[in-house]
Image 1 (cartoon, helix red, strand yellow):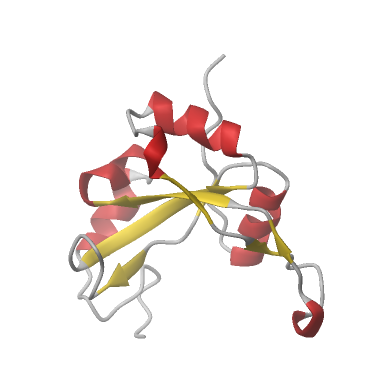
Image 2 (cartoon, rainbow, N blue to C red; image 1 turned 90 degrees about the horizontal axis):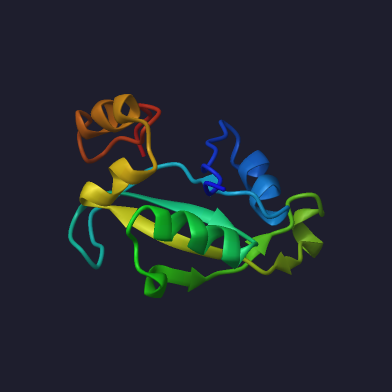
Length: 123
């Protein structure tokens, strides 16, 4: 059985809900000026289910050591009392972005200046 495909959501809260339920969430792309692998666009696939996330990563040739632990916010709780849920992610950058993100989206964001978000809004 092929691994699940990560899903993109327009609203981050919907993505967090999907990931917390064990689905694979394709987080929004961000441009980082200072990052471990240099300035550029970065993305990630997020889930509360490490086995599902690793199955997807393995199918793309990403080594298991790329799995990172980072809790997810429970977006259904009031911000002042928000608890954290178990979560995992795999960072994507450079050529790895094409393993998960739509080629048209990548072409659009790569054409933007470094001071812009993928939606085209200044930061």
